[in-house]
Length: 336
Length: 283
Image 1 (cartoon, helix red, strand yellow):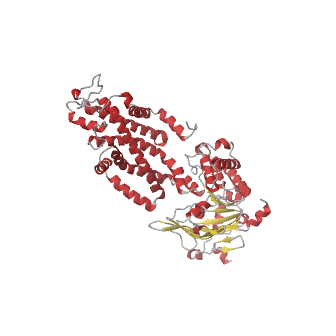
Image 2: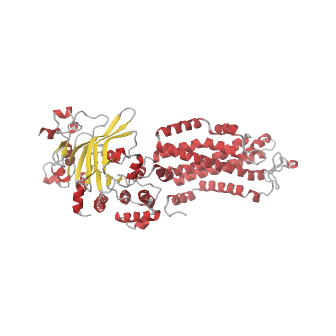
């Protein structure tokens, strides 16, 4: 794949999510974990999805793959992938798509492998299902992938059970599993959160490299802006089920527009900052993420916002486009 | 037999260190051998009456004495192991083959399917197991097959409840979600990902259930509703020995010991298997 090709393809949206609402019903109430989300992923790009715990990042990924049990969950809106609305597909059509064109890497490598099956059993499952390959053929392909995710001594390792592998190794296996059918879109849900820092860097590098080799688009879900800076080309910041800011990664770090994004950036510890900068204290965003069952009126961020205005309490801000790739949902921008 | 570090080989190593389980295993193998080799060990017909020698005390000729019809109690215990073990195995296979799939489906799919299955199961569980078996024998009639079916049906709810409960917890694991995320169909997830993870309690319950089935079968035999005479069966022997409990206590005692030993063996084995297969639960 050449870079010219990549650039041209980059413009075409692979996945377009429009007004996605994912709600969970219980007997007493309905909670909207994702509330009117608009996001698109272009071919070949890495989109970062950032936000605190409980802001709806993972639910977004699970909604796209339709891995949520419905009911109690209910997914509305449209999720167009390769020209087809995933919400219109039958369960069987959706199942065939998962692991083939769409796949996912989970947060917990320690629990995402079945302890009673060998790596071989688990890695070949998708290949055999989607490619109809024989056991032996699938095994050859699986070995190739283990080499690709740089698991040493793959031929012996493939016969082992998950407990014999370290967290980093297991995550490599999970990545191999997710990529085994060359998906067009990969959701990586905090793939490095549970790992040691040194292993994190290796896994991120591996993901970036495989993404280029296979031409896969990646949606990187994380709360770690360091990961975003390293991996993503474009970033979507979520807060309480909504998009608050969308920007190319450089612009986001250089010129964050939403107070929440600024808060997030301000709360990253920087080594050696004390001496060189005036603001010595590490900033925090006061308060906690609002309870989805009991959302504040108006802008969802206003109780924690340092630049709160009167209008913020009364009315929900609309998303304002600031250019082709930039958008922000904040009254501050509306005033200008 | 297995790969050196497979979960099964580790469990086997732990089982070998457990003395109680080894004793249980020895007792089970002992009874299995007796049942298989009965004609070799005791070539005479255990059902042929010899009224001249009725109710004799243990002697060299009849090591465990004779019953009211003069038949050797040793011989009848040896041959009686056959229906007892056959019933235990039959009942367990019956319970497993119906209870495990239903339990898996009920726990995995949940919702209305689960609700209906569980309400029916609640009704079955509301009866004491033995009473249910007794009522079923009353409906179906006596005999080996009907004994297996009635005890089997009374055991099914236990397997359903056990497997459903385990499935409910196993299906919440990330690896099940991961299997979904590569497009694995439900039936494959059920038998490849969930079933092996609920195998441990099933295996343990199987061993304990074998002991329970022997006890149930003996109970039915004792009431005259199990395997019919003249076929020797431990419970039936116990029941007919009851009439002579003061004059000739050995007639009821020895079959009772046989029942006790067999159940004891399966229970020890069940406990040992639990400790070996799931070290988290060992005390």
